[in-house]
Length: 425
Image (cartoon, rainbow, N blue to C red; front, side):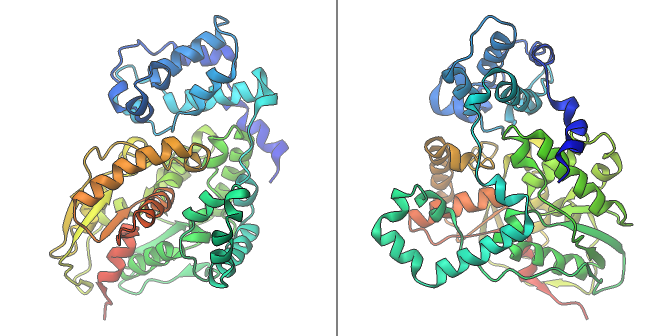
């Protein structure tokens, strides 16, 4: 990555104290955000609410409050789910404000306190991430995992939580650059495969290709694509996020496609907002669409049949799909194409499950408290299948289900749809 070049691209998102104050001043302190904030829901602490955090940012950038670890912790406890942004009558750009404030603290106020997420060193390098996935697969299959778990060494090394989050890994295969349509051609689309999803959940991308080609779309999988940059953007590294955006814009830029499809809504939310990282991203962002939205919106060919599924399926709504992309009804619309399926939404479906990108690693107590509420709601639905649109949510929820010894399969809704497709003739 050319970090020097990307610094110029990202300069406009490195907010000054004055710019942060201007954004924060849009908040009228009405409190409409409070019932929708997951950390306020857990604590009933005003400093753990969007309104409270905005007041802290105003105090810090306006000179009324001195920096403290406690102040920064209140800001870092935010899951960045943006539920508050969706209900704000003053249209406060809260996601931009909280990321900008934390980056400002890390760069200008207290650079000595900046915390680095080690995971970021892997997701920017596809080859490194794939190698890691292969090694982890050997670790799972060789018996080494059971040995280390039994010895307690994982806990000593601080890796027990990461180990519990790991799904059962399968062989990582290389992608073709293009998959031709398997039915009457309707045009071409491109598929964004992501970083963590590509290493740990290729099944979803392969299911997407299966369904899309059956629907008559040729699928491009650009070899030059990289991580979307979401983890970097939310962990005070906007230059790296901008550099990754530039590489993705270059990888997809030369393709004549109707849509750029993502299967992980967290990635999709970032891709859709690439204009904040690169002013030339307009033509790219107009084409970005979540796969459920795309499939639900296109006519279904008469010669592609779907097998009935006599089962109750629980649907989890990720924050990125609900509050940022605002396409949370699309998975339901797509799955209703399956005959006899019974769909169940979770109570408090708009509340974050606690995964929130890297949050499930950096804030385990809060993340697990929010997850436990979701798991209780899932149990009440009496289902054996849970679908979700985001890889982070899937890993977090599946780990919780395993810990509770609940036999509920977690997958992307596209994977479930692909299982029911009867190949076209």
